Amino acid sequence: MRITVNLPDTPGVYRFLDHGGKTLYIGKARNLKNRVASYFLKSVFGKTKKMVSQAKSISWVKTLSDFEAILLEAQLVRKHQPFYNVQLKDDKSPIYIVITQDEFPRVTMARKSGTFGPYTNAQTVRKVLKLIRRIYPFSQHKVGRKACLYNQMGLCSPCPNTIKNSVQKQKYLQNIKNIKKLLSGDLKFVRNDLGKEMQKYSKKNNFEEAQKVLTKMQILDYVTTPTTVVERYLNNPNLAEDLRQQEAQNLARYVQGPSLYVGRIECYDVAHLAGTNPTASMVTFVDGEPDKNRYRHFKIKKARRGDDYGALKEVLERRKKRFEDWGKPDLIIVDGGKGQLSAALEVFGYDLPVVGLAKKFETLVSFQNGKFVSTRLPAGPARNLVVRLRDEAHRFARRLHHKQVAKTLTQNLPSVVE
Image (cartoon, rainbow, N blue to C red; front, side, top):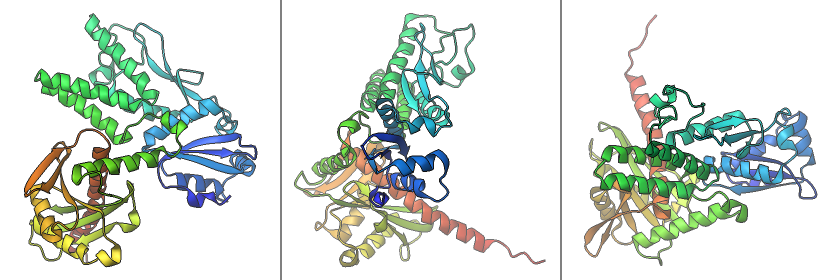
């Protein structure tokens, strides 16, 4: 089998199939290509080697996040019950997440058939529960007399030991209901529910509680962006690609209308430390996916120290000279607001769609009909795409910047003479 060449380097779930199409083993991966390739190394032995020898083909489903891959893997294992998913775990029983039927249900893990699972190992289950607990606190202990330690950490709140009224009880039971939704893969419902809760607190001017809910939404976004219903992957193996295309089409509406084709997008970010060691990054997404072969780093050579606009303009001018060699993007996004967008427009004029992305509320800044227009992107496909672009540009810019800073510090160290 040489199909590993065609596997994507994205999160997802893979299945080893025998000659009759029966599922032998199901696994998840942060990088499908690397994970599946590892099964064909010479160091593979025992039951894993036997499983690979029986496999005649491999199928896979791309997901949009590691967390979705975990949830989808559990659903597929429960559905197909592959022989080697048990055998390759040293014959141990699979692990489930159990939600008890108590007055105040507890959320635990056990090696017996439970509400959600099976999961491949205890580490995965702990990872899932740790994440969920930061969004929806829950109890893992029987009702006692004193508040538990996790209550003091905000991870068991309200704690069943301290619940004294129906309001607190209802809040705890609502948390359990939302946990079930989350574990079922209905991430969109969970996010909408958190959004409604945040709006409720904001209308009451209770900004402290609203900020807490916003933090929970950011935690959920960090591991699941963009959110979707995991069960949809079972019906559409190409769901990830379809959603990426929807993101690009949705973004086009905010830029120049649905007629704009945004297959290739470039995003730029300038990084420096108090004006020193300035660098810039260019990341490229094609059809909503990172194309790392087209990433570029730039050292700032001419712009004055601390001149962010000048640094960005310098980089974009150098990029413009490379249109013929590197190709021309369909859309350029610069990290920043009116100032950064103005610098970009000085370089490209109106020959190329250019927008800025201001950090506050993920606001898209464009220049239309002779004036700047700021559009706060709502939660959805367009916002998911630009946030992913912006965050990747930040990450890539910091990588070179940190190398530059480390090099400078090393050069300034005094020589040691023995």
